[in-house]
Length: 150
Image (cartoon, rainbow, N blue to C red; front, side, top):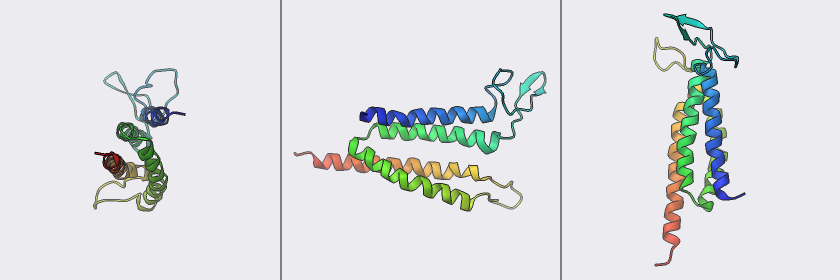
């Protein structure tokens, strides 16, 4: 499998995760034949989704899909060696981020605020994943630049 196909898997996963988030958000499927989790409430005659999964699964999955699309763009700029390094870093970082999410969340960030569920760990750990990916790509670019004879 060529490197471009391997890199394309990241954007395919990003798209699938984004669509799963839209499904749990419930807005795209109002009144359709696809079953959804909406309460089918109406506000002023307009269908309104009252999905119980909107904040716990919908928005976090949508955000994860968007973050993976950013990661794909950064990875698209990488060469084979940098891509392999990114896979190794991802294999270490993702399990650690998942474990930390379960250890930290659910948490109340301030008195009187709602408790943030485990799925909200995607926001800080996802942003850090983008930064880590950027650093890995920049390191690969720097190594490739220094290896060229002058």
